[in-house]
Length: 454
Picture (tube, rainbow, N blue to C red):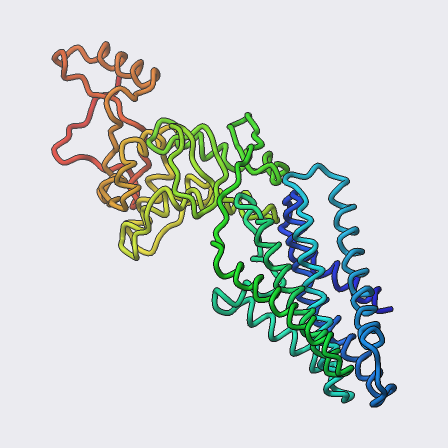
């Protein structure tokens, strides 16, 4: 019964720790270690319950060292069996699909050592306090203690049987750190259990063994505190998709490539020809400050949960331009951001924002891209103004020299051919189509004369 309960709790807890969509062995190791946050306190409560019953049954009868330690060791075997079953459940699921990385046995051994500590604390507490309510106190106390240590100061979290969650796929896990944690956890568990056994049996040899265990625990603690905790980033061989644009991610997240490509293809098309143009996306951790090859840009993907591609695209577009801190330029920035993301253009809080949105909506995607190429620096530095969007009098935006389409050049030549009265070089230049002024029909420039129809 105990194995079944611990197995169910272990699988549920481990599943909640798994990073969604990440196919990597390190993800499994972190998940099974993370399951200890529930199975550990339950195992401690179970050990305390058995200890209370054992204490009431034996009374003050003298026992040998083996008789004293036989029952707590049997409890550990039961708990380790449930942990092994949890690992097998996740491993079977993992082996059905191709996984990146490697399985770290040292991480699994550390999980076993952590369960030993939980059981030892519960057993000693139940024996010393043989009350009916003691198992509840042992379970709740272990949960509160190890949760506080894991979330407390930096040095304390190294003493707990846990890892940082979620783990960083680009940084990986450290076998040396797991070994140090195992030495500490086994040392302190053995010291507590042998110390209790020495108290019960009053044997000096058992007490000496407990002191040796204290020495081992101290060695593990010293190594945990003296060795650097930062892990150098491991070399990652990207998994890439070359079409419609090149997208490269951690091999454990390769199943998200099609969705990322679909989310970024329109953004790439709208940024083509601008300073923000890119042809390759590479997944990188947020802590990295790297310089990529021309045409390559970094993206951040934490997991493959529902909507991950849209979140990555939103973050990427938001980082193209700095925040405007509530200034009127922020409304103009939001218009461009919305277009890049393919969302409806916001009207904005001010009348000039509403006019700018209407003006920008009247441009084609080609015209908007040309506009962005000319004003990209102002957009990125949050310097956009109403004059960038046709002003407030319905001015038209003139594209930079050489960006007129062939159709516009054809219209200009036709007008020159049908307007012989105009002197050479004074033919009116074609402009991009501009949406009507916000208050009705087209506006006329002061002093402009009506042109006769062709």
